Length: 493
Image (tube, rainbow, N blue to C red):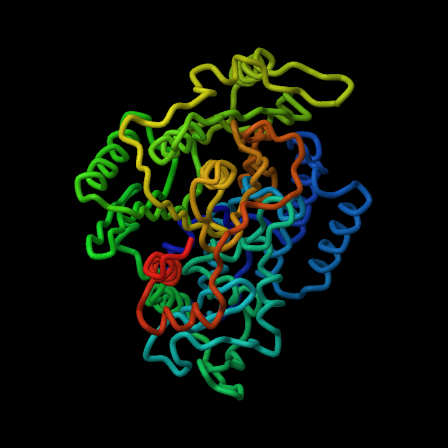
């Protein structure tokens, strides 16, 4: 969901060729970038709803200084982009997008890692067939940097809420690009890998490629196998022999009438076919409206359930309005700023003892707190596929399933918090020197009457082993879906 580099930059790599020579930024300097990083941190300290939720001021300052020292010592122009301090706030909803016109030439000018790769937890897997390294082999190191260290180096693209470490699940087909940014001037890559079933590792040298070839090679990745089920916001599959139906939901950003029609059609078909098991795939769901999460849960709920989420924030003031953008991407006018602040003042009440503004009843207008099951609710077995790409309202749905003991969660820890996350309204600022856009959520959201947040997402009930993952992909099967089908066949809950 939340990657630092805009998708437009990745797409534009198709259209221009360039020499393998790092180009300067367009319109700003390396020092401008560092200045904007520092400005962003000071702005976030004032504007973020809870900037020190998972740290303290001393620890944060130490990490910030360390990051800026690394930037100063790194001679690579492009690698400077990796030191974005946004990652230090442990908030998956924070987003920094660089202005494409100002950085795209830099991407054209670097050497790219030549293979499509993907991840399994803190491991890197070859994701292409017909290459020097076999599909499914584990990459142990690249240019003598271990895989786990490589993944930690791209933390600016994989940060999640709190202490969650599954953000690499969201890198998808962009992983080899992020690896390229670690070694932007490398003409070749020394890769140590271990093939499936092998006792010993193998070392090979891979020649770096240009931007166009790198983008093309990334697009050849085998995973995800279920791309057919990602062709629309909501897709459905029925496997009658398995007595199983699969519902893939990519977003909860839909309008209620559209969402209800899709869900009612699916569960009506499930009932018509007398299907016993439903798999709900939200591994790549970036969230949306939590009321739509509750709507989906109502189709599997066996009894009425609490649909309660509370809001709180340290701040309802709009800071630095001179850099604030409206929904059209232009500077927000003085009247718009006042209207936004009035909107917040009407919906938040200050608690001086706690030091927070808390959402009042106006924020929950239209929400159903004691939510009934849908009249066509499903009463069979429910399995929910989750990952680090399961964020925000999608995590809320997983939490509803878990807390009401209504199904089995399969996969990896969700990318946002089980108890709370930041969301609601968002402010976008244009940073003054680089013209990058910083998006900041205005409020924390606490789910289901939660009072504390330990900084962890929903944990799976069932989780694949690395060996199992390799076996499934070598067989051309979607790992989590096939693993769940095997659980169903074995009669295991």
